Amino acid sequence: MIDLQAQYRGLKVEIDAALQRVVDSAQFIGGPDCRAFEEEFASYCGVRHAVGVANGTDALTIVLRALGVGSGDEVVTVANTFVATGEAILLNGARPVFVDVEESSFTLDAEELERAITRRTRAIMPVHLYGHPADMDPILEVARRHGIPVVEDAAQAHGARIGERRVGSFGAAGCFSFYPGKNLGAWGDAGMVVTDDAELAGRVRRIANHGAGATKYDNVVVGTNSRLDSLQAAVLRVKLRHLDSWNRVRRERAADYAAALRGMPNLVLPRERAGCTSAWHLFSIRVADRDRLAAHLGANGIATSFHYTKPIHLQPAMAGLGGKPGDLPVSERLCHEVMQVPLFPEMSKDQVARVADEIRAFSASAVARA
Image (tube, rainbow, N blue to C red; front, side, top):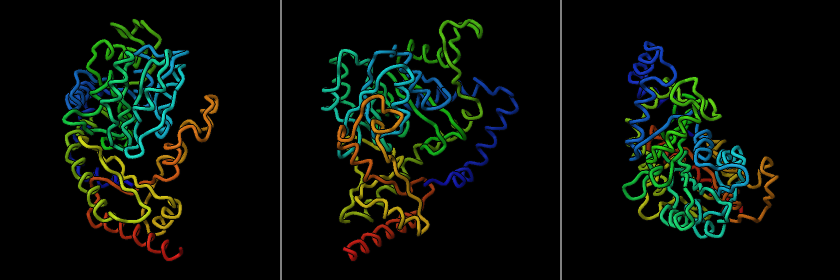
């Protein structure tokens, strides 16, 4: 699905020098590279503040806590995403309220959002899924009318834009994961909270650093240990310089897929909402017989993935919330039909053509079987 070895070969000189710089300094936690990456990523996202944390899940969990979300509260979000989105809410003692998504973009449906708001709602958490931005204008309008902060789960959408603004800059805060397979990936786990709110950034930083106040041993709140380490920051600083060019190549390869697969029966291709620029984290197609297609591609040496096989509200870990089949018909249908084929910046046009040829071959054989 992604070739990180090829990515490293292209960046070896830059990354090796960055890592050596950290080793020579022996400042492995909160060193100059961490501070520099926070500043650079904040500037990239078009916000005033960024706080590095240990991973994307912590970014979501900590920012909700910093916003005062706790026991008895509700947070409205979606279910067709990675379980971390729901976990972050539960880890704060709050209750996730799952709403359905748009059929076309797979992202939060603002009309469903309006109906989910109650007097206990303390935050709204849209997910920019597969690199595509959620429809933020109507989401923000609902949030403004009810006085509820919006936390953007941008873990899959580094560099995605609505108009000229990058995701993460629309709500009270944006949360990013730098898991190695992301468009901007570390060499391990890492995450970031971005915001224009200096006070919120300060609370996030305090919680992530054991609740420390003005000094290391002045612990003003009960916090946790969720700090970005300098080696990861150094790697991410190098990669950030290449992110826009990588995203442009992803966009080109997505267009190559679209041209090669256009008009195929029983296959729905991803598309961008007007005014949006996807980061094309994943190339997600909808196909009714995805298990058989994945088996065909696998037999021909082509990787696939399923994001996601079961929506969060139907996960055993969430059984206590009372979710049942049929609650979110669009999300549930997508979780049975959506699959991903390889897409990464080092991928060639010929490789895209080969994947498309095998998909067409499968489709032709399916028609013959019918």
